[in-house]
Length: 138
Image (tube, rainbow, N blue to C red; front, side):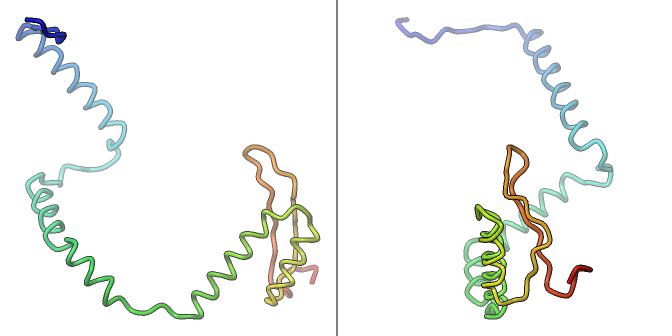
């Protein structure tokens, strides 16, 4: 009819065979992924109602209320997280001296125990630091 779409017709037996093969493949995949779980106690109807209930309560309005009235964050916690972030940034320094300097700049009494500046694929450069007085070499 002038259309580029080709019609493919299959017999009922071919469709049934294709469906059976696909179901076997899905079953094999599900067994590999979830075979270790005991799903005998799972009632699909209960699961559906659980999802409906969660969707009903955790809608966008609920999420806005949760975030609007969420308790405040302790300022000390934010400062500690920022200090930890600065310590994480030190692992990208190019020399041991820069790492030592960065640790002393924190004013938190860090002591460099181990440092590896060289990095290779799957072996990133890193360092290990302890608070002073925690290592046997202090």
